[in-house]
Image 1 (cartoon, rainbow, N blue to C red):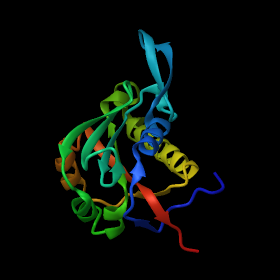
Image 2 (cartoon, rainbow, N blue to C red):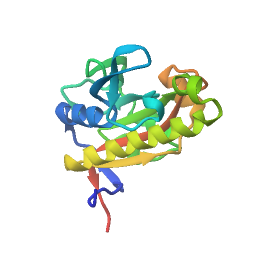
Image 3 (spheres, rainbow, N blue to C red):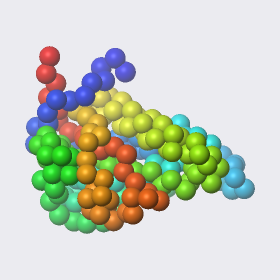
Image 4 (cartoon, rainbow, N blue to C red):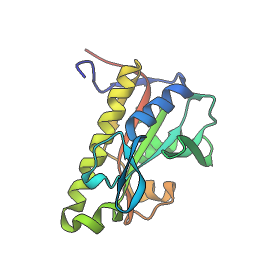
Length: 191
C-alpha cells in the first residue's frame, strides 16, 4: 500500500497472461461463497460491495499481453476466464476515447470497469448510484494494489467519452455504464 502510485507513462512492453489473470482475480474475482438472497451458493467478490450485490464488470482491452491476442474481452469471474468480444488492435482507439491521452495506447491492457445499475438499484433505490460508484472505486483500488504487488505500473483514467466507449463495449450507457479505465503495464514513475 505504501508503494502504490499512479504511473506517469507506460512502456509498450508485454506483461504475462498470468499477471493479467492475477490482477483481474484480485480486482473483481470470486474469493468465496455463502448463502444469500435465496441462493445456497452466492459468490463473494474481492471488492467490498453494498449488500454484496456486485455490480462491477471488467472489460480488459488487451494491447500487449503474452499469450492473448489483441482485442476487447469480458472477464467472467465465475469461471475465471476471458471471453473475447472483439479481436483487433484498439490501442489508438482507447487513447482517442480517453480524450487523446496517448499513454493509454502504450499500456499492456486497459481494464474498463462498468457497473450494472439494476443489481444494486432493486435494493437501494435512490442510494444505488452512490453505492455502485463506491463499489467500482473499491475494485479499482484492488487492481492498483494487485498490479503494484506484481511490480507493474497502473493508472486510473476517469476522462473518456461515455457514449463512444459504450458503443465500443456494446452496452447501453443506462442499465450498464463505464466508470473508470484502469491501465496496467510496464510503468514509468517520475519523481
